[in-house]
Image: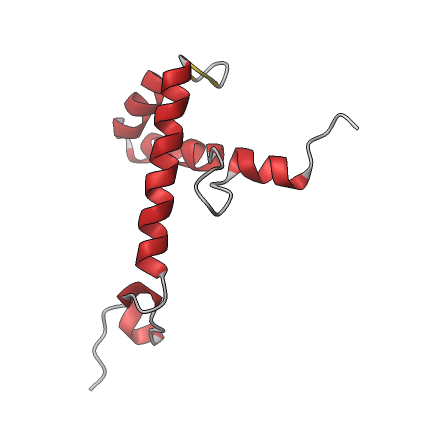
Amino acid sequence: QGGKDGHEVARTWSNNGDGEGTNYLGLQLMLIRDMLSGRKEWTRYIEALYDLSTGSARTPANATRWQEGVRVATRALKAEVSPGSVAAQPVAPVQKLGVVAQ
């Protein structure tokens, strides 16, 4: 019984669909993006908030700062894909590629 249930895992690794998850998967993906691109913007930001060797926030305020970023990003994404938004409209495959049909 020591394992985490699915809801607890979702809250840890994702935004939980409502911005209240910690989205540590997103955090790791940003670190990988920096590593692959040779850039360091996200790495510097995340290292300021978290000790990457332990995965722990450096301070409670840093954990709160990350969580607020997850909330803001979730709200922005939901606004982009809400019914009626341009991003939510069905797009033909050629339009996705920027090809104009003649």
